[in-house]
Image (cartoon, rainbow, N blue to C red):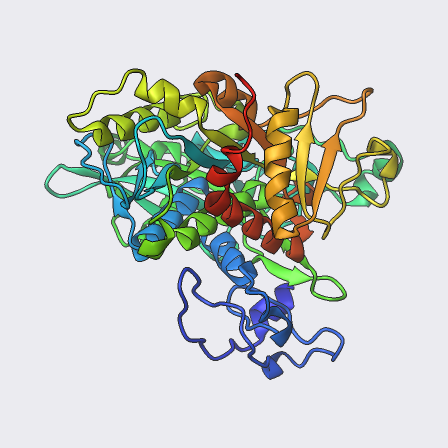
Length: 519
């Protein structure tokens, strides 16, 4: 992969398409000169095979989104760009909202959380919200506030672990840094700016087997504080700085001057303008297609940007024409939260009241002069949430880790997650309603239950179900290598999920009307 990326010429540019900077198309990749059995290797700029023409595929758009979204900030910014291009109106949580039926709107919080919605033309007070929620963050390494450290004459970068990552997969990778910085302007104002250093900048090397003879028998067990420290450079900087340097900027003491120089050159500013930063360690290898039939997606951050993109595209594509909302009685919504991997307890996480506040403000804005009793409460009772987070696919080398009758496979469709102890929020009712959409659309659906002798993960589903009081189904695209620096899922599952989500927005109101439980 690295050789292809570094040494092959880039293909000629493709014409722009909606929501995708380099879509799949019937373009021949003769420049790659790959064998006939594998005619192309899809990265974000690579063209498509004619096999992808029908039905329409969103895989190229997902690859672009993944390659643009190295951090939760970039994922939110890219979603913002696509929504603006699609005609959605940007709102501010600090301003009054003047919403209208048929309107399409969104807002961001912390530039790592986003809520977008489209209001049906026939919406009436008390009607529900049809929502798909996902999360923008992934397990990664993050720079410590004071990142500069030296070891045996080497410039090292202090990092902390975020979430429950498979940290051994971060060794011997071509790594770099991305995120946001806070800049001070000449007029003493402040602004935040996203940054992505695209070249390999840092690396965590493993110890040679000659110096660790038992690693293959005893296992690789690195100390996360002392062994998981990326190497930046060999030249030792002067340990002391003159008094002027010390007083001019605290970041000069906290971070290597070499690192600040590289960062400022990437941003296009002076080093002393950088007064704060929030940076993730990122893998430079691009997202791409692979496998014998190019049927797999190889990428970092599939958990959970694949769900974010499927949700985002389904909302935009189901609401891009006026007639698509002309008969809609509900409000279609997508919520993308930060900090799910560490429990969601933040102002930009699902544990905050972001979604509930948005629902209340939307209802209040649409009430105008008519005051309906319990309008928001009635709307919540009629609402439905799809909690979309990646699912554990059957691993062919570890099949015993799955419960015998619930073994989701790659390329077999979206997975509905069940757990009697409410680690997932799915119920018989919510599973039925979601599967009914798939039945009508002739889409495959799988189901997952964890083994009784194993612990079960969780999602934002139970948090939102209990916090808002909304009917919820937990589901996800099956994947392998979850929480690795490099994950994989099936290409067909992405398109199946998109079609399922789009049908959810278009059909759920009518299906839900046929079911009465609390009577």
